Image (cartoon, rainbow, N blue to C red; front, side, top):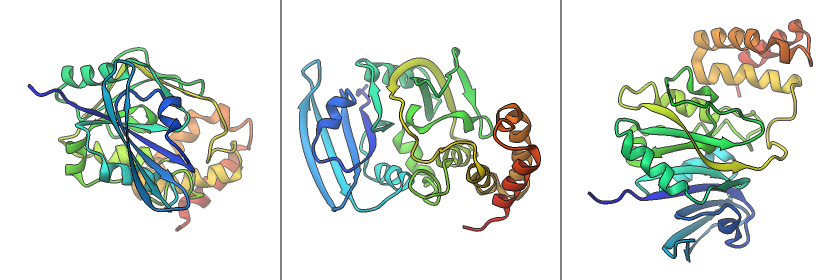
Length: 265
């Protein structure tokens, strides 16, 4: 049986050289989508820690937005298995073996999420599966997938959502929700560490303020539709009430979220 190949898909901005490969501890082939002020393609070969020659491609693009970057990566990726990466992420040296072993073991799963070392995210300690409603807790940086199976669905990231749009996050939530609505797509999590995410300022989260709650309302409808969007809104308010009410009253929270829910952007 031919060995599966792994390719890292990095989204970044204004990279002027290949140093992100070393900073991120890339040990495999890598596709870098570099949103900057020019359109070009560069290629580069480098040895990993075991002496294996890896292939790097960097697509410079004048487009903006994380979802556009992810979609471009999906379009030009070549690996059998792909894993998303942001420019603040540092991989474990054995991430290739960890990821490929998981896909070889769990042959029925299209998507496998892995553990991240990240102070803003508490990862489960046990293996579990996800459906379209429970996958909202996953972040794209921990997601690996069988590329051909994902391409076959024709499902892309919503380019009106995510960092760089002004509409807040949620792009990976919608992507996963749509993918897992397909009967042939299955997702799971394995508690194996693949990377550390460095703490820093979020590109879209600026606190639990008025705009955050407005974006929550808009995002809920865009992901789940009119009816399920409303259900999710009130479920979310109940689950996070103790947290949210440290910043706004219940009345203001409901008002802001419903304002966003009604907006057309």
